[in-house]
Amino acid sequence: MLTITIAIMLMMPQQPHAFIRRSPTVAYRLQSEAGLRPMATARTSLDLLEDDKTLELYEKIADILSANPIWFRTVFDGTLYAPTPYNILCSIFLEISEEIGGLAGKHFTDFGAGDLRASLLAVNLFGMRATAIEKDPIISAKARKVFEAARQEGLTGGLCLLDNTDAFSVSWKDTDVVFLFYPKPPPLLPGDEFRKSLQKKINELKEGAVLAILFVGAQIEFELDLFTDMPPTKNMPLLISNGNGELYLQFYRPPNRLRNLKQLRSGPTYVNYDALSTIQTAA
Ligand SMILES: C[S@@+](CC[C@H](N)C(=O)[O-])C[C@H]1O[C@@H](n2cnc3c(N)ncnc32)[C@H](O)[C@@H]1O
Image (cartoon, rainbow, N blue to C red; front, side, top):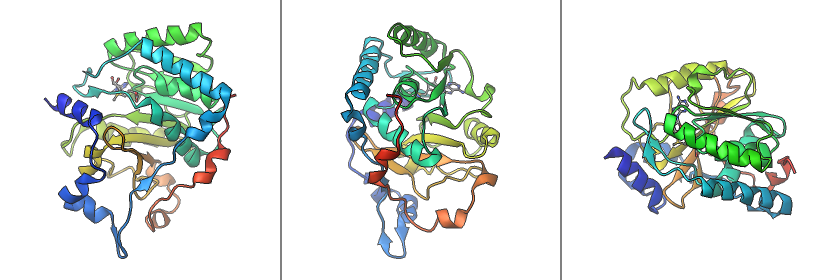
């Protein structure tokens, strides 16, 4: 039942910020002395795709994914397999580059890689190395098919697939960014094991590395972007999509690495639309 609810939530258009009226806690978080302030809004990434070669790669990967679909389904831990909408992935990489600098040569760890969409874009559009980790056996079998189809097109250079593998059992020491989309239906128990494991694991990240988590609107409503031992780098999550249900992106660093928490909390996060030129593509 919860799975169906989240699936519908992801597919149905929602009223932007409809939850503000329902949730006094979230409304409180969005208020400043000056009154209501907007959620930070992520940039669009269409400019990136104006380059012909990049667009060709982007479409080639889309074709491979369309030929190897994975439908919404419940996975090994009772949570939902739902892919990140393909059209927002470039925006996500742009935001990652804001956090860690130029992406070329950096290491992308795809926690629960699904059909490898994020990893394939990481290596082919952004010149990153990627480790795609997937634990669910059925999704792993699909991921292997996608990997093989991509390999035949010459799109797997720099990509390592760890199928049937728990992302918590793989070292994060050598990575620059761990990406995670885990739309577990709220409410979660305070002692939720997954959140506890994340907060422990993040301490493995090296200096400058980040954990990037994509949330559905309902998770933000229940403040599941807030962790006791894992402070976010932005004072508010970025609204990255409000197309088919709201999706928000937030970044985390190990607690002892946050340079100036006070500064981070001092105001809303606004996105610099001119920063597109700082992206280094593989092309
Ligand atoms: C919501 S799907 C997202 C798939 C993909 N990251 C995307 O954004 O399109 C979450 C995926 O994470 C996988 N997963 C959950 N916990 C995991 C773990 N501990 N290790 C590896 N994969 C995991 C699930 O099996 C599922 O395929």
